[in-house]
Length: 217
Image (cartoon, rainbow, N blue to C red):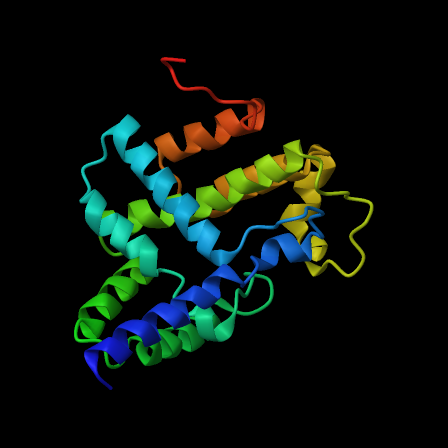
């Protein structure tokens, strides 16, 4: 293919992420006119990364992190958004890596971009660890926003296989709030450092979706 075709092919493929709805929201029957797509998640996690770097002064290459997060969901163009309870981590990783290789094949910088994707997946560098924490926390924070809007009814969860998870059951029994379950689940499952844990805990104890204004307004 020509360079022009490579540019447009990659662009059109990535554009599909705008139409792939995040599976977690479908699993929990989130009732809302517009539910977050994978592309919107990518934007959200990049903005979260910028804020976390700014406020906590992490020693990371933020431009590398932003690039890493821009491509961290590329595989979902092919395999879709598979939740952690739908498939084993090993099977998803195998499918996703193959998909990413196929998507990037042909781009002059494809190999370099693929290495960045694999670095994120390996959690092997400080940028990858930071980006991974942002990725997981962003999802938990989005659940809080949906919960504050009243988008989830825990009594209307027929067919939701996630409810079979023992930790999910335990957390829901401890607190009836859907988003508190999400946030506490993240704190127990993911390797958050003290700063990510602090932001998560703040979200548990406070409304985060209230009207925000610019400081000079």
